[in-house]
Image (cartoon, rainbow, N blue to C red):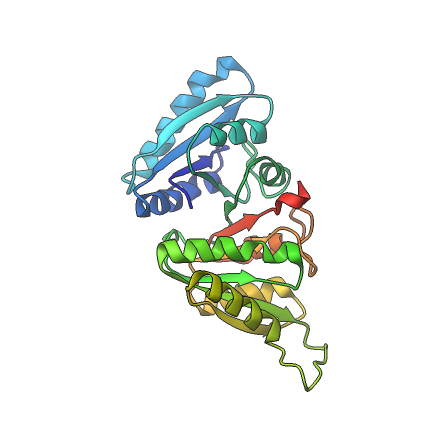
Length: 269
């Protein structure tokens, strides 16, 4: 869970679009919100602080009042990660692309932050709805049979319990793969859902999707179910592999209409 959200701003419109979404999420938990930017020269701190205040003014009324923070460092990811470490129960919410001051982009900065911070990171892709930020509703949780891919499941379950959401465990099967008649194709996600229900007492749904592009199948399922969030491990057997986000995880972020909660298993640090 989180009580404090941190949004890195790089000056791009995409990074600013993440702020109202993060504000709605923070307001749900009666939490706090920091909007931060990183400069590499102390002389730039003052102008950057002015830019942050002006940007917040342009956003108008938000459900929670953000704090504007300017961090001085030659490493964007390290500065943001160090800031998060000073806060209690903090989670990063960031845009998936942008090319300004802090370079909070889908790629190297996201990858480095996932390596540096403990816990999940919420990524706002280019097609996320402006009114996103709800924490109830449906959660879509892709699993792929790998141990690392399954590490996202208890995180999604904990969020679902806290916010009254319904998690859907989904496995994508290539339509060309033939399943033995004695084996139910839903056996794997059904077992995970049953185990998690037994451990938590919270209901978990499951489904099997068919498609040769896992990311597209997952996003389409999320759209059909008006998902509030998609949860994904950044490493797994079907292509959720060691990030530079050029994999299934990146494709999900790129096309999803809801935020994506990414988690890098500690074993990959």
